[in-house]
Image: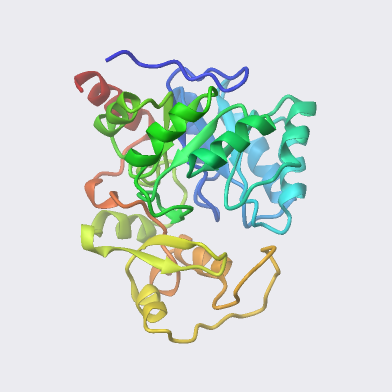
Length: 315
């Protein structure tokens, strides 16, 4: 099967593979730079950190990425959304991926700076609006994805609908863990793919070993849907924290940093994600895609790319 060329504005990665931007502090400079060097688009998770921290991550990633392509992912739901977008633009980021809401203001910012804006959408209607607003491409994300979810429909349902609706590149996301999945998405009309969960189990991902072990140990039945203060459901790996949420037990909220535009205050999602990221996995949320149970090895990013491409060629 022919490998498609992915063109996002003026950006053409060597391979049509984007590493999903996982917040908070899951996809940092080390991972994004490694993916960029390997020929994909490396994406820093830009939500839940300050604009100053984001600037530092971009500078570090740029110093390690060679001539590779870098992006950031910033949730529209973040209170400092515009400040984070401006910080990324000021640092010369190549692309900005954004979801958990829709911002019209970001498109003029991208146009004036030459930064490609790529919304994450889960319906043909949202994709059409994104194209009309000036998006360089869209990520079509299905319910199989990890983290906050915008739909309960499969990527296999929504991808063909979105492909028929827009003329800009469409990047498939949600549950993609290998080159065989990639081939299926291309058959359904995708110009490229976005993978997040697979890259957590890379040597360059900077999360704690305990976090990666949760991924390695996960069974299919361990992947659950949880309630998030963001107002969207989330897909995570079952642990003591998610079990207490399911029982409706009160969670310690701590001091609120007002990180979100709107928050249910059921618990602090920022604190829960950081606890897990730093290795206290039973005290926090471990987001993961539906097919995390299929991944059983921690590998260097370069090796992950080689395997994906070999599997794709075989498919």
